[in-house]
Length: 308
Length: 325
Image: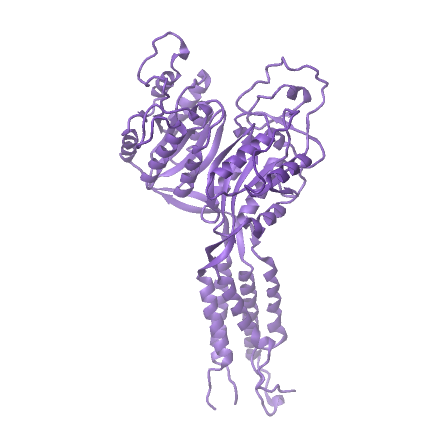
């Protein structure tokens, strides 16, 4: 009888062709949610406090926040953008404007890795003013990115009057991310080479601290009044951060795991629909998979099984 | 190096790889008396081989669909131009007005704004160079690694338009900028392009250290000096005896004593940047191989490639299949 190239052969051939196409990594323009974030990272010294205890991740708040940002950026779909800024004292300074996350992934990650508390140009920490500065910077950009403000909310020195946020709710969208734990921990005091010098004591903080990595004012002991020798403790000031978030119309998230931040930042409500080249290789591969497995799932009805 | 999957749930498809072992993929053919057929080891081996191929192909496809990627990869790049570290003054004095004009800007513009345009202009016109960026005020900030990613460097320069904060502390900035050349083969001209309004003193101790580093790395220093309305040109010696009379002048003198090529350009001169670009163009460069970090490398192509290699012999076998006697 005549040998014919049957349906099973055609199926398998189609599977091979689809696999070849998938290998070529085809991309077609599709409308997808993409994100545009400006990450502002608190680099004051309370962020050196170590209150994270997750396997394989840094224990200090700054290191943990960096790892979380890195994870979140890698998980963003291509076409999304991420910029990076630093907060200390009352100001925010950007390192770079939002960049596309896939093409510039190497550079973004390298810069993020080098963020360090020693980059601070002054040592105090006025959260409300910092947040105001961040909001101002975001508002100035057109189109405005979403703000992701990562901080432990630690105010140093304590401010009896909390300043107002100069923002109408909803004017800027984004997220305040609380970094750290609500249980108080001491703040490591490090020198310019990152060697530990012990912990910050209350007495050091009574007067405004002006010691940064490059400005040493600790020699000035005139403010060491009322030193009871106790450590200056720091914890995540969640109520304050939540209040700020409510006032500014921002979301609030406590940073527990890097996955948590990554998930929150892929919330479609924070994204915008834009036409971006989208990889469809996996769909082609899926069809190929179905074609290969089909003969095993559904026996050819025309053939009878032979017993014995 | 660690691996991950974009959508790990698709790995469940890999369970389909078991199916070829449970059920044959070929339609059965009627034969009058199977008992008469002798046992054929070759046939059994071929059958197993085909099942194994199908099974592996299914697994490879499933792995590819799940989107595997490798983290922390380094990719080799080839750079041909000069290596330029942009050292940008971000102190609060840079918010003051600039005394000259640059590219049709007004005299009332802040030094930040002028510096931003000047640097962007410079980077756009030096096509093959590698750029890094360091910002400094009281402390230095690592802004960009040495990279050919022009778009990223421009995004960093763009953010210079915001207000700067803190005092000018130039020595740590220079140290960080010089650190970019530390431990790399010197294949091209190494340039530190300082954009600053000066106004700073370097301590004796740091002076010697920085001089040493400059000489060790054989870097050149170009200083684009943004003069304030009330400060003096660089080459005018101070009239008074006081050290503070003109810190810019002292810094200029110090730079001249570095023992490496040094040029100062005053941004009041509209040709300053042209001159700087032309000067750099005259320097000889050899290509440099360097490693750039690729945080996430897609590996699904490998899976699809494997699947394809496995599918081709299956396809050949399928074409040889007998459908009826």
